[in-house]
Image (cartoon, rainbow, N blue to C red; front, side, top):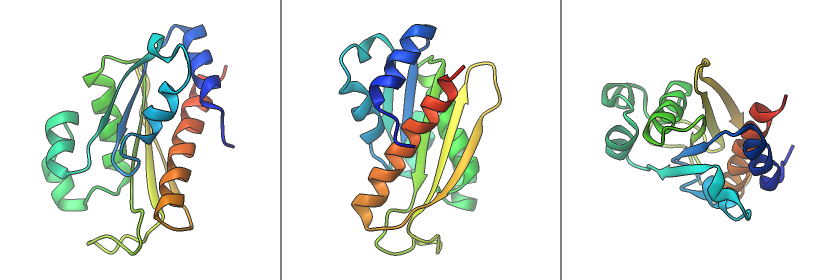
Length: 158
């Protein structure tokens, strides 16, 4: 879909909602694209770039046992990251990214291009989406950031 980040900022502002991100794979690219928009400070609560397991646990409250058992590239971890960002920043809506950018599979054999997005909204069930992207490391990371912004846009529609 490739939503303009300005659309996300405008919709959140119209609805009086605050946004947050929890990023592993994208390492802050999602929140960076959002704050490039003038007026973003009115709706962006914050963004956490948590690459390591310990950062995901300490900063976002992701269960360490879950990470050790399944690794970071799962729908459950994406959901926990989104929930953690929602709580950390006291936001209304949060998106999370976790995945494998490559060039090869991760240590658990998860193929490059596997991405999980989490979307948490205050008072609603957290949702996840799995993507299978192609291309090199930079292309996968950029496409995942675009998909995360699209998820925010879809959540802010109607």
